[in-house]
Image (cartoon, rainbow, N blue to C red; front, side, top):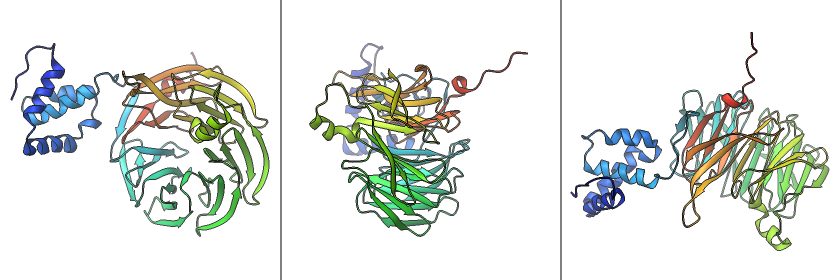
Length: 400
């Protein structure tokens, strides 16, 4: 085994070590060392501490050094990182949180839906499907979960018993939402249809030809009756039990300089949207890194500000509309690939950035802020990171 001298050629030194492990048996052991020790879930400080243990052996040492090299330009997370939730084996696609902020539901490309206890980080349920999961929602009380998979299947999960009911939608349900009591739900996807479901009986009550293009965001308002759908730059409000369109308007969300053909091609991915629980306000993030705040009673743009260097990949609004978190990229490598993700906390009344949370590899692809804005969850890979926001969102104590 090659011995490293000094600090000047650490990268080449590591490569020499890995070359020494190039035969099939050693390579297999090296991969096992990486996989079973879950080095990719450890922080950089934890990995460095592990290296100080000289009893770990050269194979594990090389695996740890390889992981550190891969993340050498990713900033360490600050003290606001509460914990990292591990368990998914593929990227996390969607996250939903209960009203009391105690539990979270996550969906992943590994075909699973997981229920988490956020106070301990414990995985409470591992609910398996047969296809990648694109969307999840959880009822305010945490009793039921709702998920949509790439094979066109919707599943209603009883999160207490673990029982499931499933029914076919036809097209891939990219978005799902639940009424507060968990009895009804809506789903939407690339065909522009909004489907309203009796979830207890698995019955499609209404199929609304809502839009002519893919639907990019949906929500059910706190009254359990009104629904919202967004496609491209058009927002529509629905009375769900009757299927009646209540009103619609066009938002000024198109990126500057985009042609009609560009917009039609990219609109499904161009704008990410989130709504307050009463559906009075919304917030959007676009491919230019701009966040806009909207009055949904009339479609008026209330505020716009530059948030990220490029795409806003995720956005979530607190229940009262005071705060939002947005996910994007903090830095790029020489190939213009995102190497370090960024989650930002915003005060929407002023457009002020309250904090930037670093320590994630690659784009932050999904994020959610707790209804009371005490914490946020985000993911850029197969883990979820729980962030404490209370330093910036907790009301200041009264002076004696």
